[in-house]
Image 1 (tube, protein in one colour):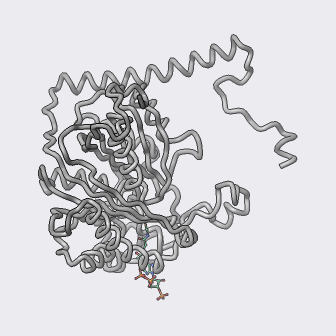
Image 2: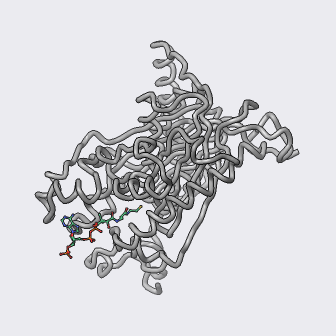
Image 3: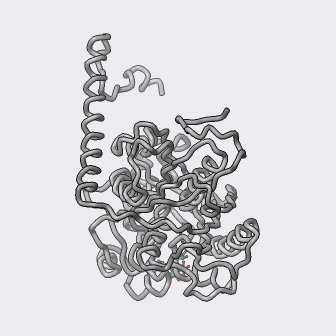
Length: 402
Ligand code: COA
């Protein structure tokens, strides 16, 4: 019997394979709106240039209190609310991000703690802007294999912290935000039907943050040379994106045994309106069949697709039984697509009392986290660790040798 994290079904892999449905969805964006006109005050650009070359009019930028985790937590709480689930029912959290809070610990673990998802494993997934497609595919496969019943998939970013604000070619593109899906096993056919995931690492240098990893660790020189911010070859990324959006969408539709005519909606990664228009032409589909909201958010990387899904749901553009393709691309180079059949999931009416009770659960999670830290500190004192609960500095002699 194969089981992870207390899956009560305990199905053998592939046995009575359940379907992985999206039963909850949520999004969060920072309050601060930065318009193209605002950007034209810091770099040599104009609203007219940005709109005509990208379709972007404004984006949300993280305030001092927003972080990748805090946005993810807000989106995840909303998604759990729609799914009407308690955090402890989540068995796995996959958080796709290109702007994690740290190299480690994972941002997913920070989110797990804040939610009080005490029965969940948690990890970050790095596949740049394709990350949400990768995470969704992975979460769905965990469910379809029978290993898990409930998975929380999140895309969250504060890329504004990694943008070179003196580079007019990149700083106009990106924005901050988060989106989350709750996936759950159901017998009813539908949900995530198929996915394709691809990579071409030979194009890694086309979109890169060169320093801060193990190859080029942080030094005064890397900071001086601005190597910790996004560097991009825009034209090459553009050419790559228009090509793979079409091939990935066609491939994933075919792998589900469907045709492009069966699609009600395509939800593409929101990078550039011209890339989406080129994909529409390449697929022979009208632009109206594409969900587009990049004019208000810019490119929010891993968050762009789930945010677009949330807005499509609230605009009534997604109905039960609709077939949809989610398709994305990004640094790596990576790309991928997912074929979805939206189930008849009606968000439950949540009473005021239920909302208060949920806030109570999150307050308990905060208290539990503080209690655990305090207990670890006490244990450290009892067992003699002098620096319990604190970040230890590398011994000076080791630092000097390195
Ligand atoms: N404002 C004004 N002018 C700008 C500018 C800006 N923000 N950014 C670049 N320019 C200038 C360039 O310097 C260039 O000037 P030059 O002709 O004097 O050299 C001119 O505009 C044209 O540059 P070009 O690179 O050909 O523009 P473009 O039409 O290719 O548009 C991008 C540039 C970045 C918008 C476009 O290449 C793109 O969207 N690429 C994909 C990027 C992407 O999606 N990345 C994320 C992937 S997940």
